[in-house]
View (cartoon, rainbow, N blue to C red):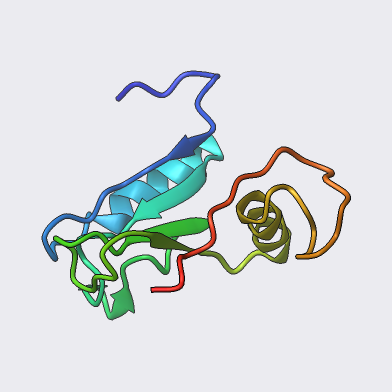
Length: 117
């Protein structure tokens, strides 16, 4: 294991519908006081001990690329239960603005909105 004082988060990847052993991951997260970012892109709908993968982390990511469980051709989704993280993610995807139409940019952001497919 390569956890150092610089380690801020751990990112388990659930592959091909097979969940990571989240009990082990959660014990590491707790022991080292880390954030948990789950990659559930290839296991959407899979469960670990009757809980959906992607429901354990501070943030969880899904991908909608053509080889994933659900596809839109491109793009993805980030999920969180945190209001603080949610608000920051909204600004990141909206060019750094707190809301569309605003011309204040409190942070550097990007145009991560899904296309009009």
